[in-house]
Image (spheres, rainbow over the protein chains, first blue to last red):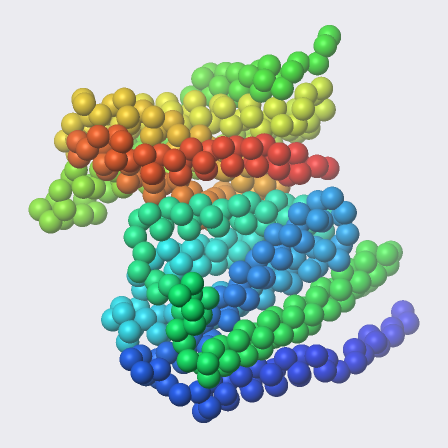
Length: 235
Length: 228
């Protein structure tokens, strides 16, 4: 009977708890302590989920592409694990953007969906990174998986300006950013504070999720390495 | 013997692929028949009394080119899988970039051949007057085909490493085709409706920029997809 040792238990993930607590606090502030917008009413509160999710989605995919580019030169498995984790978390946040957007658009624009530049760009980024995850899933060898997905991640980043530009020429009706507006802040300060609080909370949440997903990838790779080293494949 | 330069090697590889294609003609014929079928089927997918054929033609044309092009690009690394032919190609004393450029060049010729049949077909079936528009149309076709083929050939190389290449290639490639197909279809629509080509320059600029960026990026990226 082979000797089995219990996997070492990870210490409790305090960072994840903190991220969830801060996100919860941002929601509480957005729902109860921020007044509804004058024209859009309660629908406007979706902004506090929608915009931070979009920021995190783009951050996640940017970092995935960057980690892939660095992997091609450094060949460090940690970079690949990070790219994998960031892409997966990015898809989750992109899904949040694509769900929260139509929920807001229906009462405000009167339609669930419109082929506006930013909507289309987000949708196609979602497709690109779903493809990225599918590609990772069908390549069993770790090095080939890292290499090919790095190439796809980098090309995906190159694609962003082209989709944006072409759909922008097609037509656009997305509200222009109301916070970083050259004419000065148009949102009242209490909303701006909630807005930035939500950005901070979601960024923290992204870091916590990637951290947890990264830990999983490390464990999985270690397990695979152990199984490969065992003569009968661990069975 | 001196190793051939980048362009000479690319040309040799393109000629090899085209010779294989010319002697068997199987992929070309199926692509042509496929695009003719697509053109015919699309006609019945709309109510012709509500949407005129002239309004449909550009979209049909570009959807057809995209999918028949994918067939060609999938095949371009498929032929190398038999008898480990890709390994022989990889030990050849040529830069790996030239393998990509050669494959892409052969694919451009292949797709252009399909276009040479389906374009007259759509002119006949959809009653599209091509006579005054063929020169600008040729420019749009060339610009868009180069972009489609560059990205498609690279993704064909990526997916050739996997078990489900024929399914994965369109899933990965089609999002990248958006900034090609959209400007190409819009510019085609402008040209077919008799507007001067100058009105489509914004679209042509996107196509040209896409070609420059992605031909370069895919050529540089290709060696990373075939390391062993």
